[in-house]
Image 1 (cartoon, helix red, strand yellow):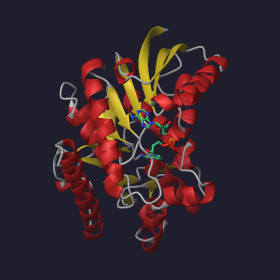
Image 2 (cartoon, protein in one colour; image 1 turned 135 degrees about the vertical axis):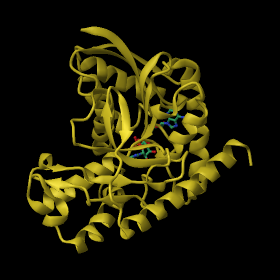
Image 3 (cartoon, protein in one colour; image 1 turned 180 degrees about the vertical axis):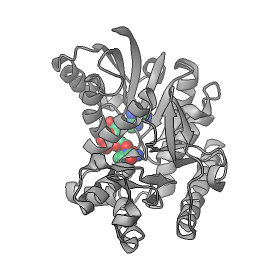
Length: 328
Ligand SMILES: NC(=O)c1ccc[n+]([C@@H]2O[C@H](COP(=O)([O-])OP(=O)(O)OC[C@H]3O[C@@H](n4cnc5c(N)ncnc54)[C@H](O)[C@@H]3O)[C@@H](O)[C@H]2O)c1
């Protein structure tokens, strides 16, 4: 049994955290032999609710959980953390413009970037779940200059899991047989779910599924899946978002098997002609806790046109976010 590591979950009184905390504390992310101290950050009005979450974590009697620290103070929450699940964000309220949402969240992720910079371990692995996730991750990294940019990522794993589920259902095969579907770009309706490199039972998905479906309904179903869940449940995806967040950090921590790639929002290095310094979802492979963008994949003109749309949106978000940070 190794020494405990400290892991922070923000938005810890919210609905994604309610599913996520169980998965983490049960040893399904960092391993069954890794003891954990969990720090739980939320805002002051949520401290009562958070106390209830802490009671339940104690009552689960998790063998790996050595301590739980609820707090509204980022300096306490981020102290010496090795991994950070940044789930907490301002939700979009009725009548709220996208710009207002972005502005409110940029301020939150600026504060949390500074707190990570000042208090976290320098090799901390950061996953941003709170929306707009890609741009929030960029802002967080910007305000944490002492931590490598590669350590800040945004979640598109839920979109990848949704894409796999659609293909598995269409082919009537187990989901574990479906590999290497890619999410490119922003975690938003402009993302591009791409099956061109996907396989099912070792065969190319493009040989098994009609191109007309892959270029239309498949793309829009995955793009709009979050909205479909909200329409049905009257609340946004939570169980599936928690599972995806756990998948993302587990693979970052333990690595991916050879020949399998996963999608992560990472700071662009210019690969595939994507402008540098936006957080863009790419296919990556992971070894020794370092991700690497998979190189050399072919993009046809249809894919390229989709990448252009999502790139444009991310550049606009970056510009708006930087304007907020600079007080314009
Ligand atoms: N990337 C993805 O795939 C994905 C998927 C689903 C949801 N999301 C996003 O995840 C976020 C959380 O979703 P949820 O359903 O858990 O929402 P929720 O409203 O149930 O919970 C959010 C929690 O964050 C807290 N919070 C707000 N500001 C905070 C701050 N400054 N510091 C710490 N905590 C703060 C709130 O008090 C609340 O408890 C939302 O932004 C949602 O849009 C992302």
